[in-house]
Amino acid sequence: MTLGRLAEQLASLQRLPQSEPDYTLARRYAPIIRFDQREPFYPSAVGYTVFREDSPSSSFPRQIQLADDIAFVIEYAIWWDWDIQHLYELEHIWVSIDRDGNLADAEASWHGRYHQMRDESGLLPLQDGRLAICSEPGKHAFAPSPQQLLRREAQTRASCGARAGLMGVHVTPLFEGLIRDETPLNNRLAHTYLERLRFEPTFDFSIDFDLRQAAFVPWRHLFQWIPQRVTAWLDHLGATIPPERRRVLRIAHRGASAYAAENSAEAMRAAAELGADYVEIDIRATADHCPVVIHDGGLQRTHAVAGHVSDYSLDELRRLTATGDPILSFDQAVQLCRELGLGLYLDIKRLTSKSARALFESLAARQYWKYAIFGSFRPDYLAHIKAACPEARTSILFGAVDLDPVKLAQSVGADFVHPCWENRAAQPHKLLTPEWIASVRAADLGIVCWHEERPAEIAALMALGVDAICSDKPELLMRA
Image 1 (tube, helix red, strand yellow):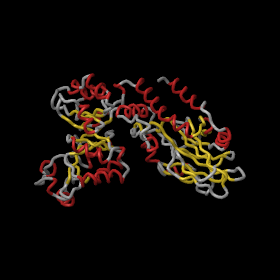
Image 2: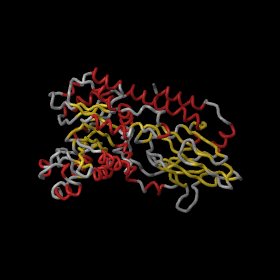
Image 3: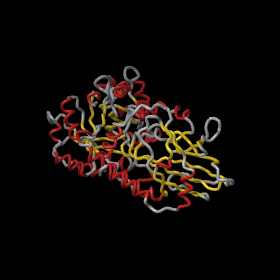
Image 4: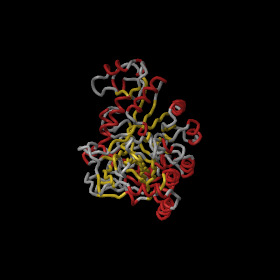
């Protein structure tokens, strides 16, 4: 798939049949979008719907309701090929037109929700009688004025910088079952492409983009076109980004454990400072079924406390480890990683049904499912996690060299295979033969390796195009 074929695919969308009256209305009232001076992405297509009576939207989870003085509402489902953090973006604007043909009100999407497009004075921002609103740099959520976007400045800068591409292929509920491209390999391709386009926003919204420049089609046509568009982009990236140039996820093993106590808050903070994307942390259950972050079943090595994790309640463990590096609850770890912008690679050592529910609740409460991968040597744990939460990403760990990784992963529905061969070979990358990798990739599985601190071995693993590498020294995983 060349860029020329991508262009032709977009052109073919515009040739689809449509209602001339609705098309004319959609073009007439099309908004103007104000972009940051350094914005790398602009809309390429718009799926419009004209509502002349109350009805549910087919592209956004909301009901369209017309006030008594409103003649019709136009919904603009605006398509970008890219958000700075993931492949494809669909944002929305709704304009309400009164019976005299004037713009009476407007709303627009905002990170899964929607809000009014009136500025601090309560006025609609207009330009030549048309709505003119600002788009969040890289992320494209809408606001009536720059002041509202500046309230999210820190999050926006992180998204456009260190977190660029981290979400890979983002499949929203609207396209579940229709877009089937969210594989570990495709996530790496999208991550690689977007990291090259990371930028520092100026918050100077002086670039006006007339939405009429995009392709205008009825929403039903755009909806049918989107899945093939996603696939086409991934085909293009797969053909143009060789394995050795694909972005590898940098996972700090037990945090940056070469520089701070393993699984500690300090190790997680160090991991973030050293450029990690994820932290690998170990999970065990307490006597009262609370998930906590610790590798060993016993407490002696890491906390100089007699007994085992499962002997004590969470409150008791907090008291026993209050000095030094206190044991973290999983909930604390999720909150800290959210603040630091780190994903979670969970090595589940011991889990009960109640502690599993607590683990899920912590991730759901902070909307962190997308940034968590569940790993374990216990296939039964992963099978239970997938059964409870099919959307969970899972990774099966194993030490044997001669087993079939694909059959093992498929038996529990895992998304990644994680060969733990660092103690079985001086150069574990040599065990990842072309045949082994081809078999894993053919099954749409990802590959995680650990934990590696030898630069030459890290370089060899990267050259193979693995998806993630763990290291006690995450800065070694950085490369130009």
